Structures are given as structure tokens and as C-alpha cells.
Image 1 (cartoon, helix red, strand yellow):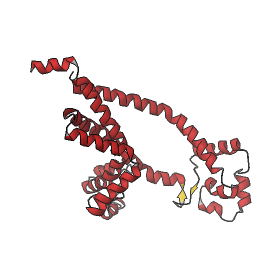
Image 2 (cartoon, one colour; image 1 turned 90 degrees about the horizontal axis):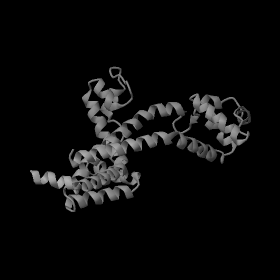
Image 3 (cartoon, one colour; image 1 turned 45 degrees about the horizontal axis):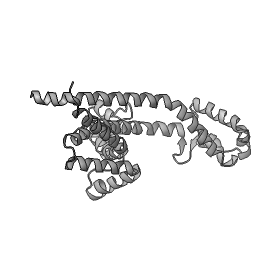
Image 4 (tube, one colour; image 1 turned 120 degrees about the horizontal axis):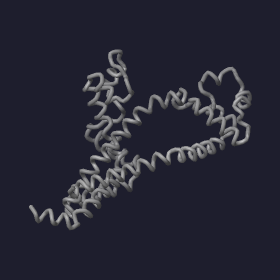
Amino acid sequence: MNAFGITIQGLAEHLRRLLIRRIISIPVILFFLSILIFSLVLFLSPSERVAVFVSSGDALQNVSIQELIEKYELNAPFHVQYLKWIKGITKGDLGWSNSARMPISEALAIRIPATIELLLAGQLIVFFGGIALGTLTARYRDGFVDHFVRTATTIGVSLPEFVVALFLLIVFYVCFDLLPPGRLGLAATDVVHSSAFINYTGLHILDGLLNWRLDVCADAVRHLILPAVAYSLGGLAATVRLMRSSLLANLSRGYVYTARLKK
């Protein structure tokens, strides 16, 4: 196996171990996050917290605030309120969103497909972009390409994602009008909401392919590029560095020199 193959195998093993650790840590992280979030909510008065425990706007009508406080036990001890909150979450009752003007569960159902689409696109950029750029930097070590990519990845790690996103938006949308924000353009939105278009998954790229509407698929990809790049820069920088260091470490080994001499 050549150095590139060994590096790819090592990268895949690293990503596998990282994925396993993330999966194992998810329940623990969610537990502590739930306690933290619920503790922050308790800084509000019971009358201000009523909206969090109400699943629809109609439930706030024709009833007094005190009755709702007693109904949802908002004056109860912390552990009683926390367990009641967790029980509601397990049943899908996440409360009412004043910003979205709908139950939180419905708001999440609308936005989760966009989040999944962004995560998948970002991971594809991290994996394939990291391998390609890491290979280039190792191939042209200490050259212009190496210094340029390393500088760009360092900047990508250092800057917050929202700063990178704003910069990309200003350059590619405001200045050049190439990559617009949002999920779809007006024409594609009309197609997606028409009766002839079937939303199988809520993922516009996949649904566009399943409906044989390549125009919708292309428009969704065009709108996804900027947020996916902004989201993936941190992971891309780490993957490029890992790929570069692994390749350089393997290229300096004896069997690589022996293989070169045989050519």
C-alpha cells in the first residue's frame, strides 16, 4: 500500500473513532445542556415562563396567568419542574415559540431538513476538500500552494463562523451577485409549493432529484454553497492539517524511497 493509501486509511480510522466518541458523548452532553437551559429559564418569573409550557397560542386565551402557573406547577421545586419538563419533551410537547408563532415541535419539523442538508453538505466539503487540499499541501511542501492553504485554514480556524459567513455573503452576493442567501429562489419556491411537486423528505436537493426537477436541485445547491462553506471551514482546516502531516510522515519513511528508486 502506498503512502496515500495509508494516509486515507488512517484518516478514515480517525474519523471513525471521532464519530464513535461523538455518538457516545451525545446523551451526556444533552443531559447537561438540558439542565443548563432549564436553569437559565428559571431566572424568569413564573408569569414569564408560562409561554414556554403552553403548546399553542389558544391556550393563553380565556384563562388567567395564575391558573396557568398552578396548572404547570411553575412554583414547584426545581427537580419537580425539571422532571415535568423532560416528560413533556418525551411526548413531543416542546412548548410554544413566540418568534415562530407556532408550536416549537412544528417549527423544528420545518427547519430540521434545512439543517440536515447543511450538515451533509458541510461534511462532504470537510472530507473531500480536506483530502484534496491536504494532498496538495504535502505534494508542494513549502511552496506557494502550501503556504496559501495553510494561511487560509489558519484564518478559517481563527474566525467565528458568522464572521466568515458575512464576509462570503458580502463578496459573493452583494458584490458579484453569484451565490444568494436563503434556501431557494422565487421560481424554485413556486415549484416546490406547487401541487405537482412532492416533498418526500423536505431536503430540496434530494426532493428535486426524486421529482426529476433538476432546476430545483441546481437552485438549492446554488443557495447551499455559501452556508456550507462557512460551516465547514473549521473542520476543513483540521482535516487539511491532519492529511498534510500524515502524508509527510509517510513520505519520509524508507519504503517510500525504495519504491521511488525502483521506478
